[in-house]
Image (cartoon, helix red, strand yellow):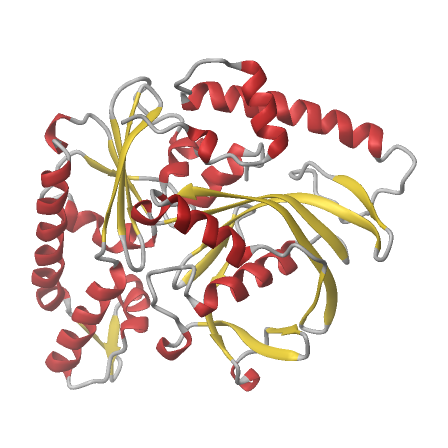
Length: 379
């Protein structure tokens, strides 16, 4: 089955332009990108002519296409695009901003405070109790708060309308149109919302929200351009906190998608328990990424944890590989890149089973960079 990506790009402007450019039933990613580039030219034209008689804010960033809209109750709104990857442990924005997704109502826990309707939330927390690990993002209590926080942090003006917003869902959830529509409704800010971030007042609003299959957009990131096999099969793998997504491309089209509900957090928990048992120390799973990057020191001595964690990593890698083999003929797919925060830890172990697996540049950010590329915004 080839996926018609008109279901992804719901923005009226993008869809109408795209519809006028091509009358084919099947749309390739290459044609869509051409369409979006044409759209960027039109939007830029509108920017120049719609803002001609208005002062341009000094803090406006050239990486956004911006226009001004008039609201009778709030005055002039600064209008912009944004792409947000609402991960369980980290929230990423296409501009390169990344922050922990943990939240608490105890504002003493963080110097970053979001206020909505007099309710205050401590943001950017990293301890285990601050994360919501509900795999259904539409029911995850942290998702919408991090979405509002990301929009507020990115807003270039006190009054900002996001006229095109890109987010994503795990592939298995994205396949269900009812789930997609519920997720859009859950995130939507249809009326101006007054918020404060660390005492700075903002008013934000969303218009069109487009939902993409998680990790698929990384195929279009500029960092992938020199690696992608033009027109050949590519299996993009995305290793997230709670899921492992795989998306098959051929001739720049999505052929099929799959989600395995094994994420890096489960593996970190198993590793943390094993290290705690081995060392007698209380290791939390939220400490594992830092430990794997910088080493575990006890009483000033570096502890060799590789013999403890390697069997765990290989066990989970083998299970992931076996599940992928049931879905795809991996050995016959020329290019198998892996993205996502989990790739940083698990790449070397997965490569034992998939020798031609390639880790991408900026694996943790590549998916949201790809979403940004789709609206003409690149780092």
